[in-house]
Length: 147
Image 1 (cartoon, rainbow, N blue to C red):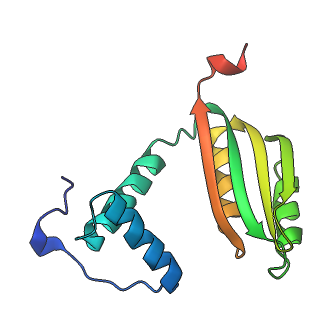
Image 2 (image 1 turned 90 degrees about the vertical axis):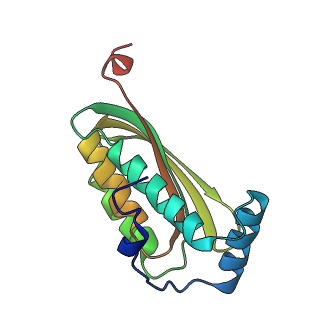
């Protein structure tokens, strides 16, 4: 249990989501036996996100991949993705771009470099409007880069 597990410490807030997303979330919770408590399922997701954040190693050399799915018709998203990536040419080893359908693209970046720069790049790209899904996966060991 975390520091805020005392029921007196609970804070209520509202979240607006598309109905279909909520239905899928409820179905996922039901499959996992969590159908009775949507709040606890959201708390679990929040905790998992914070744990992932705590595993960042900004001072280490890291290798990893960033996977994004985005709608290239969203505003000037493609230009903004390119601009940001051009600022990180030393960290981006390779990219793979796949057209999923008329609007959506999958892009995978192979990354290598100082953790702080890799996390900064991922945060900037994933924060862009039109990026529907994204995930950074990293391993941090200086020795793995010396092989």
